[in-house]
Length: 325
Length: 232
Image (cartoon, each protein chain N blue to C red):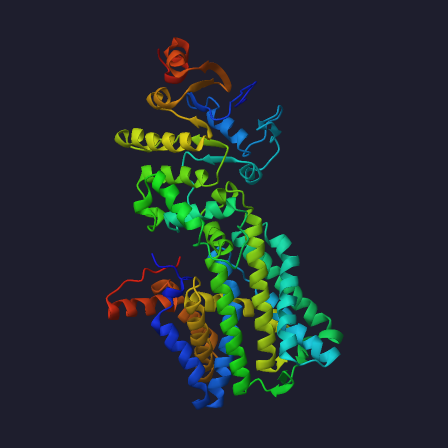
């Protein structure tokens, strides 16, 4: 059986896709670059949802961490005037980590629907706070973010430089998640999906398995929030809203939540789908997305990645052995 | 209903103790008590002289108490090898290591050696779901064995195993356990298995131990046969 966290399982198409993401953007129009950059931070946020799903933990509140990262940037700009990515990315990661460390104390005790809905409850609490504390957060108007700097050099959110910075972050996140999932901690997470009793009888606390995964997911959410803030240039309480969390779950399921390539494919397809759906069906684009999700769940529960695997198997005559559930 | 009552049992280091009794006689309750799944209303449980009465299963596992289950508790979405590697990682206290890979030295060779001992090496890289029932039983015990326990508790190691395979499963198990000098307590319905492999047998009836001694003499007693089999 080939494991999705095995480097050898990275398909040739993955290498080709990485090469394309590096080489092609300079030749693309600006609007595509913007969509690609959005896909980068979407991927990072979705990786958080995806690792949790690997342990059977579905969250409808991951926007909590995304908004935490985004507002960490907002407050830093508002109060300190700091726009430096080399400072704000670690800050966003730390903010997500601390929020996850606090909320995770509660969440580690719950599973299944309780885990999903409690996460939702926490994210909605943050949404409410961001909405009501308008003298700090700007309320429904949100906060303007403006342009980031990298080592002192201005890096507009729609620039090639910013895109490559986001792509670099994607590379780092990919490495971290691969290492995590191939480590004992990652395997115990997968084991949790299988058999919590056996884990406890092995001398390992299941709650700790949940907690440390939650920390990782929260940290990734924070990083995604920082990137999103500068890409979009404006942050609003809706960043913590349940629809945002739903989008993360949507993308995780669209790709296939188990691996790294799946969420990347899901994030890219989602951003382009959203762009085109809102262009051609401006009043019904959400319905279009819903129909696509329905079709995926009914006919392709392995997500887009499973479609790729089938095509690859047909071409090479080899079955990789899907690793999704 | 009292499931376990007035139990006073001493087990020596390295001893192999079989437990028999009719359904509902308190055998599994006894196992659940000594492995931390249940807490007694009164009394104490000592392992290697240390009071373990109030410890949770994971704390007991850290103190060398491991168990297998009547229905094997396995990681069904992993390979056989990965399951054993996880036990070794847990024993090494590296369950929270999130950077170094699970598949590495010295765990990997050690896991292969354990699978060899249990006769499971040919299944090493196959999903657990592909194991036959006897193999699942052996793997359940191998996962506990990989925790390097001083006390291993097995709940019906041959239940669900075919009549042809049960002695082979037990032969493999006993050889491994003797080699490791592991104190073993096992519950078994099959009198043949207890007679053949146990050095000492405890007979449970309505939550109490009604006989304790060498299998041949104990299992020959008419009241024991009545309690266990329902007839003499």
